[in-house]
Length: 384
Image (cartoon, rainbow, N blue to C red; front, side, top):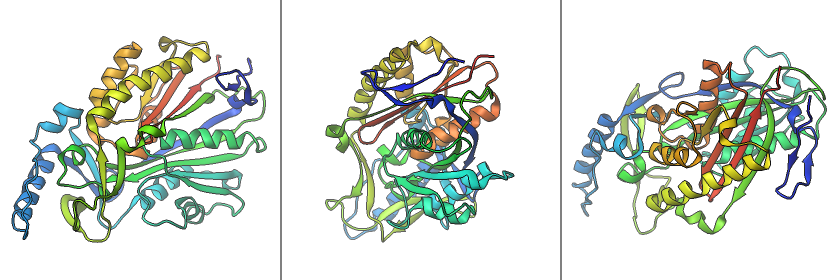
């Protein structure tokens, strides 16, 4: 079998035998499906925003908000519903659930040497979610555990980080990589531009280092890339807004139904320059993906399955058009789950592998957005 090597654009080898890093398992944890929560339809979101408008009108300083119609999210971003986590749970609970599912039935937990969690909605600064997973999942104390706060490309970057780290561990070593975000904990339910887009969810992938020369027909890491343009980072932010004082109204789920709550403790809001982000990503993502494939001696038609961060269906359609991705090769679930940030790519990957990709040989994952940052991981199965 040909030895595949990860290289910089200049050709310098970074990790020999990166193709020995393989996917050993995937799982997901989705509110309303297998965790307490609810699926909030566009009509329900519209109704809740109308309720919120009535409440805001009773404030000492009444505030008008731009309401969402039942058709607005589908027309603008291709979303029919989004998953909302139960009010008693958080991103950590989803990460634990996804991690538990991917490890269910395994007897080799001592081989896990790395735990990486991608999240931007941690409920505390320390300890890390990774350390919580180590404890809750009964993993060995002899692991490297860390959280990555990267945003929309965070899971793909975490996957690359884990693959690189595994390159220095013995064969048989494994890494648990989780992406988990409860975006309803930071979106402002009165902001139509963001509250219609985001949802909650988590996904997990178990990577393993195979013995050199292994012929196991698993999905291998062929190549990876990370790209960051910090000068445009402020186009997407999560932070308090002093210019909008007072507590923030948020969506939640109670007893399986979407609801509202007034968050008096966390004043964070998602702030996004929507039109600028759309324009930038529609140009940046195809450019970087094309360059990455060319460096691997490949063209877009050589990729059988495309998994992009589920940011905005209209954006994904424009990216696919520029890359000439064949119909059906780009897989999506944003219509059902919305943008789950760190949970986006691993949830989609788990669904596709569960559905079966028997005829596929190459699978490309692309995370992009906050930062601006972009991550690419190309998986490939050895030829029979």
